[in-house]
Each structure stands twice: as structure tokens, then as C-alpha cells.
Length: 272
Length: 246
Image (tube, rainbow over all chains, first blue to last red; front, side):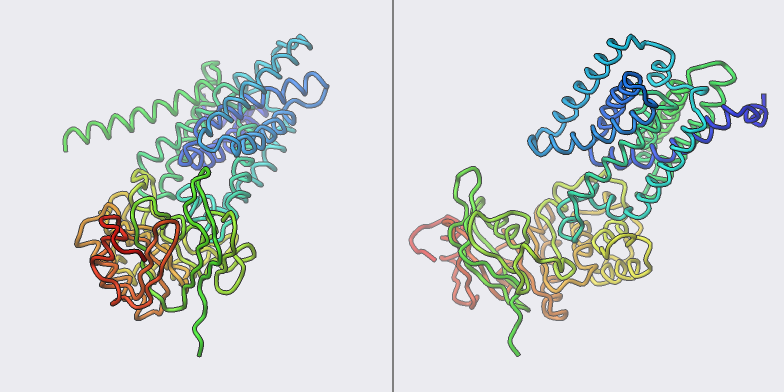
């Protein structure tokens, strides 16, 4: 079954378009997160999106918008709480994740909304990507991509050496908040494809490949994006052909690529 | 013509968790100075430097950079800084080339990365510190001395008028230390760069710096004439003897 046949289905066109946007953004923002030792923030924000989805179902607005709003709100709360625990930054992640998930569970149970729509957010879905989702993802994707290009040097600097970045004249506190907000939006977008439970993996595994293969920051970024794009395109293809869960397939492909890279490097290291 | 006042502190107090570190410190750094701050561990040398740069806030007192109150100072392009942890506590696995690291020190607002002047500034700074040939090497692959030069190039890329260094030769070998201080002396002499360096390398400090600042007992004493400082006094400052006082 060829790619052209699969792309003759409108829902698969949308899934591929959304997937490519997601892969590009998740791999880029994920690299910054990994280098800032904040790998788990993706996990926290993705779980926080559940509260937004649940709020959408509870109050009757479109759950995807709720997911974006909840991720952004969670990001701001994380930054706020971190100031109270400067030496225990991970506490803020645990607090926000548990609180937002608790909120989601309460709203879902009140509404008795354990349905297919909720499961599409938990595990990702190909047919769940609606035309309006693609429009929102395209616009949000442009904002995130534009911001990343515009503030590339700033984001690199605060990831590499925050103190020196401050002395170079960069508004470090504002940049930290903005980068976390961009990450939150990316997480919310990725939830539609790979699902809440696997977003964090899409933001960590491709950067892990990039870190192994890249000899420069731009090189690591290129490998990270290439890995994510490959995994998403091939993963969506395989999940259509074999009727697999797209999120799981994509993440397993990322893990497979990483294991090959680590294996080859391990063998090379042994032979040296 | 009068020299410009690069940094000035007046009546500065600072404490960590209630333990006083600096009490009523006043000092001036003038344009063209090469000031080495020495003192025992925990005496407040690095704290003093961070206060000068606004990285820490004083409990009391006032600080100026280039004649402007630190709270309203925005000309960070005039100030270069090499932090204490730059080479010692640096993550060698960070995927960055020397060029990328040095470019991060040249900041001219949004979209800086895409400007041609950044590349020119980076290679000018690398040439200045003598590691142009290492531009495309990964920073983690360099030796301690080379890495420290890369960080120095990062601080110099924006062509600052004053350079502040916090224990820049920690963790590098003796010959690299000598070479590093020789480079600082050259920058001070030939480029007219004002230098303030916190260091434990007493020998290098005395052979290269123009002024010595002794930091101890919550205070600072600046020796304008380096010849007035003898070995017995240094030993006393560093805590080996308490027979004389600054």
C-alpha cells in the first residue's frame, strides 16, 4: 500500500500535516528542555493538558483549546512555584502534574465522560485530527517556529549558561517563561497525535539521538528534528497499514532509532 | 584627561543567611586598571565581583558601573564576564562548538544569530585569544586551558571596555595559567581593557596586575602601589599569619 493511496484519505492528509508540525516543534523545543535538565517538564505539561480536555468536556467548549490553555497555565504555575523552591525545581513539576491530573479526574468523573474522545487525547488518534485542529496547529506552529528562530541565540544561551546570558544583557527571566510557554503549546499540539501519555517521549527521544550524533548545537538539532520527522511519518504510515496506535508506534520507532545509534556507538567504542 | 570610573561601590553590606560577608565596603575601579582580588576561601571575593555586576543585590550601599547606578545600567555590551564555573563545572557533553559558544556572548537583541557581524565578532575574538583554529571543535573536546580561552573569547566578542573574571584558572595546568594571565596582561596593555580578576594565583596576580585588592575580615583594601605589598603581608591576608593587619 503506497503513501499516495494513504494520502488520498483526507483524515490521513490532516494526520500527516499535523504530525510533521508536531515532530518539528517537539524535537526542537525538546532539545532545549533536555539541555536545561528539564526533561520531565514535557511529562508534566502533557498530563496538565488532561485538565483542559476535561474542562472542555465539562463546560462544553472544544477540548483541544482547553488542552492548549491548560498547558500554558501549568507552565506559568511551574515557573511561579520554582521561585519558592530554587534548589528543588522538580517539586514544582510534581505539584503541578498531580494537581492538574486530580482536577481532570474530578471533572471527568462528575461528567461521567470516560469516552472515545477522552481516549483519543490519552493515546493519540489519526481520525481525531479535525480540520480546525490542523488550522490551530498550523498557526500555533508558526508562532512557535518563528519565536524559536528569532530567539535562537537567546534560548541557546540560557540553556548553556544562564548567568553569562544575563550578563550579556539578555532578559533571562522573561526568556525562561517564554521558552516554557512555547514548550507548553508544543506539548498541547502533540497531544492530538501521540496522546497525553507519550508526548514526553517525543520530546526526549529525538533530542537524545541528536545529542549522540551532533557535533554542534545546530547539528544536534538537525539530527533531533530528522529523527522525529522520520518516526512520525513512518509511524503514521505503519499505524494506518497495521491498525496500530499512532502514538505508541511513533515512540517505539524513536526508541528503536536511539537503540541502534547507542548500539553502533557502543560497538565502535569497544573496538577503539 | 581624567580617567573614567568603571566601577564604584559605596558602603556596601552583604550577608549570606545572616552571616555577614562584606560590611561597609567602598572601592573604585578606574579605566585601564588591572585589579587582582585576593583573599582566603570564603572571604567574599566572588561575592564582591557579583555585587559589582548586579548578579547579587547588596543589603545596603550603592554600586555604579560606568558612572550609572547599577539598577538602571543597561550597557552590558561594555562589560565582559567570565564566571567561576565556566570551565570547571561546565558540562562537557553539551553539544556546542567553540564558535557557537563564543557567538552566545555577542548579543545585539532579537535575531542576533542571523547577522553577519556576529560571525566577524566571533572570529575576531578567537584570533585575539589565539584559538581561531579551534572554532569548529566541540567545546567539550578541548583541554582546560583551551576551554578557558574559548570562554574568554565569549566575554570579549562584544568588545567590552571592562572584563570581570572570577577565578578563571581554576582546574587548569600551571603552564596554561601562566599563558592565560599573560594574555590578560596583553589585553590590558595593548587594548586598554580594564580587568578585575578574582584569583588564588598569587604569583600571577603580583607579576601581571597593576593593583591588588585584599579581601578579608568583611572588608577590602586596595593596594594602589603593588610594590608596597610584601610576602609577609600576603601570607597574613591568606590567613597564614595574623601579626599584621591591612
